[in-house]
Image (cartoon, rainbow over all chains, first blue to last red; front, side, top):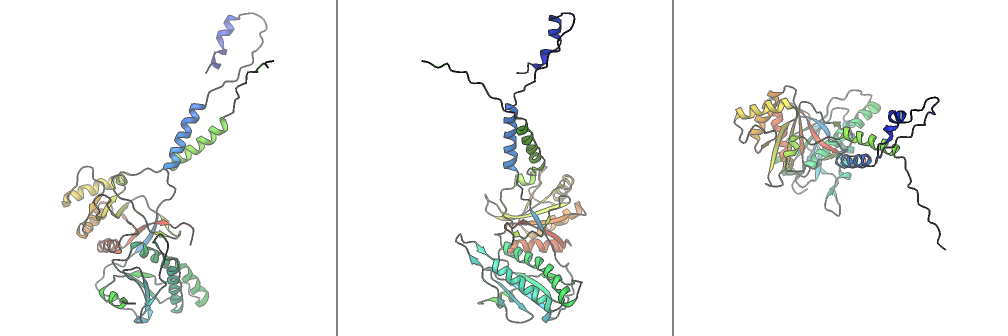
Length: 198
Length: 175
């Protein structure tokens, strides 16, 4: 295999003729790369198959600290979004009667698709925030039995609504500062009662 | 009349570019590969993360306290799995959990399976005690009931860790 290295000194001694010696052209050195390529491909396939390119993302969440004195807000400035135990989403402003968002569409495999519901939530939240000129407080209440995935999807929608709210406040009212965001608050028995049978 | 068969010459293919590219890819995958941590090795469950849009950030590596909420595939019970990432934090937390009298703590424990909120609260306190800059992340299965996450959020709030992260997955296909 690696025979190229012997072309040097040994031959010189044997052929020890004096005078001009033709410089022998060095032969190209050939190395069998097949085993190397084999192993490299093996490792490459291993690493390619074991690496997962999807890295987990995070969604930052802030909850209000525990304080004894409750903060009073105007009922009219409150937009409550409630998630019932069966995954239905409702909203109401102040003490109005709760209204239902579009029900999730069921796919053939049985998993619920909330695309429509989420789009409606975003629209309502943006409109309400713009109409109240930055003074709206969105409160999210979710039943303990509701799926966590849905709660996060709603939170994500509220987060993505922020950009639109800021943009529209600026364009329509000339307000550059965004003060109030949304909060999460516990779902109590009264909430369940209000949403019963809707 | 037999035709004289000419001996076929073996053909040589220059493999150098192939090897170059293969090595390049190999190095790339080797460097980007992230292996399972000890904590992930011990877990007996798989988490299906909730899907969100892409406006989320990457998970912080340092000072991280991971609270996983999942259903054990063997025991079929839901529990909180708390673990810290940094080597030093793991040791600090272990000694504190031992002092606090948490059951099932040995020299190798990294992940703590917690079933009640009282211990979860205590563990969160120990984490904050072990590392002042601890950042909390809740990694829960999207099919779980929201109650579990709410409990964890309440405990974090009681221990004055009012900012934390939800671990999510990027939704594929955009909106």
